Image (cartoon, rainbow, N blue to C red; front, side, top):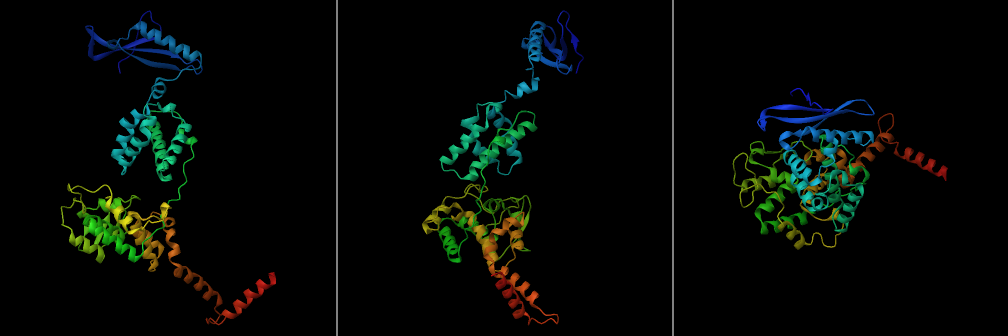
Length: 400
């Protein structure tokens, strides 16, 4: 940057000249002003603007006087802070956050849809500094009154919170995040519904009558434990028919996992027309990867009455229920919870604990094993069962 030169007769006003731009037959000038902070004594510089934009030494000096008045009143803020205060929520979302999300988030379309449906009309014309916790509380109330699930309400609040966090990180905003004053919904939306063998068979039969592709995708979820998004993302490069393994890349927990191709999955794969390595297994009519669940799935569910009389959303049959059915059947057949969790891509064992009640025999085996060990005599026999039982009984009666 060129050295700043003082303007004679105008105290605290300086300029630098452009090496490329001309104005009125001479190099264009950008004017600057400086003053010392009354509290810290620090020399502060502020850029005013170019002569070609209408700035003159007189205008720069007037601007300096205004800044000095703000400083004496204790109201001075740096230019970057004043500029940040003028940032409008809608402009920030469209020009910065949503474009970043498109490049960095797997479910960017969900953020964009949430913004368009619930945030744009309410906040797009408001400055970041004008959105208060009370505004977000009103948003919560309106979403709940419209029947939206708590997970949807939380998504909206999380989107606002992340947008503000990014604004701070990108130096577009330096104030408080309004979400700090808002209580987020505490979710208990773990699905506990799984299908019986008869229900699963009826569902697949109904889907085959409506759409072969939809039935095939449902089979992958039921017999492979895949999420809907994972089924849609499968390409032929993920299918190793020689070793009977499919690879799910970049799953929800950001980890890849192997899916063994069992007989039901093999039948679906054999019925498909093999494509290029990067071509999806399941395509829409345009030959593109499927992004949304066909409404025919819900038609079949309703026709079979799988959700008749059920109001708790955790008990309702959805496409995701097929994945829960896979895990439930595996546990009921004696597969350890840890193995099931690995098979369906759970990040922690806590997530798999919801299936623990389906393995009562495995739990009883642990109690029986401890009882057998405790009742063994020193010689290795197990004839001490009665003596141990009598001791426990006598202790209990003493307490009475």
